[in-house]
Image 1 (cartoon, rainbow over the protein chains, first blue to last red):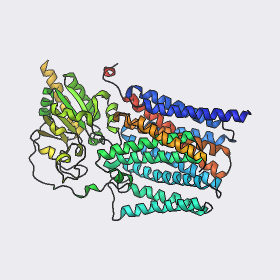
Image 2 (image 1 turned 45 degrees about the horizontal axis):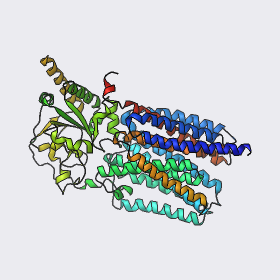
Image 3 (image 1 turned 180 degrees about the horizontal axis):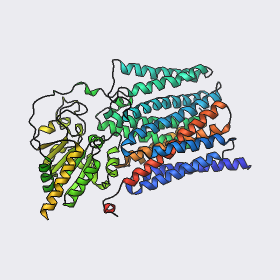
Image 4 (image 1 turned 120 degrees about the vertical axis):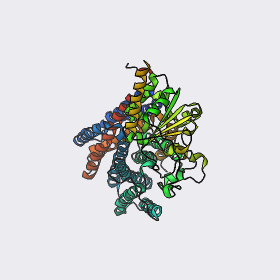
Length: 467
Length: 99
């Protein structure tokens, strides 16, 4: 064997090792105890693959590679150090970067091979470029909405789905034409521009509450475009990484769409944000009971078990650290405190868990919806902080409700329900919540951070009085 | 169809199943780190970009390749960094007692 042959084998062996390490990495991520080992594993796999690639005999000039690697690392560090509340937009931005990279490579590959591109290669390049382009602009739009530089309000108009789908359909037709007639090079840029426009249009009708589904879906698209790139470059490593990312995004999209009560086809075509149409009969004068921080503290102190249900409102109010103080104060008194987390409680899958973990709440106290729901009938107090629609019992009982069928936290089954809320105004989706007028419900009107802080102060007072 | 393609399709389908089985087991607790980790792994696209940037075949390919290396590498570094930071925050009850 001549030396290049040996190097080539070594490169392939390194890629194979990286593939194994990537799969192990995700396997170890399944539980908090082994998760960091999973990250190490992924890092080693990545390093191996990059070093092996640098040995490739076809590389004649290392200057641009070095500049790219260094510059990318410099940009990557601040993106890895963002605040935990900003993780959703950071994630959307990284989907955009990943897709951007895939489109650039696909474009370069096309112009290197054109006009004599074999049909199959053209087809995978087309998939790569179309998926990559729409993920790029779609993710940028999502990041903009999450960062609130773009209006979060969904913008809808008549025939929106038709316009959007035609954009995509034309891009696909162009792809077919290019597969049949690869020499029509002028068509290639169109195959990038149309999906770029589609990506923007796809996110325009989407509101903030739908972001968990959208981010998951874009994650899946980013993975699939990378897998297509693997087909084009005949890189098995890339195909595996893309397929892993694609299936991860797919699973998360399905979980999120179920939690949001949307059908999966509805999600696939990006046609969200249309449920809000009928805000249920608002303004009915309902009797609600309210309580002061002092009364709330008294009830919590007397409880044996408390379930706290945080929603995004808690994160917006930056109340998680005050909630941790409340948690500590109650645990010190021997109260069993758990957190019940709805799958769409944050702005991306699992976001609320990260926010609470950051506030130093032990992860074994964080239960997901299916784990905590059977416990509510035996729970003394359910304390809802900044969550609304996910606690709405109408989703179980009222077939006319727009959220009928949505899986919810069964807080209304707890012995006492306390809801911290600014006012009686309806929630994000504009739907009336009958939970608030139940006999067992006490409304705690005020800002989440301030109110929880006052409860903590009262509890400290109780403790001092008891000693 | 070329046999390379067939092999690639097998790899894709099998990897998809492996991904499905492995990721299904990830606790909802860790869905955010899951997404940032898969994102970092997905940035393996950097290997394709490196080859383009280094082969020096055409100016266009070199320029696009270099920009792609920058974009992918920022995901590699940022993705692993934030995943590790997030996972470092997850502590069990026992460890919480001021160590």
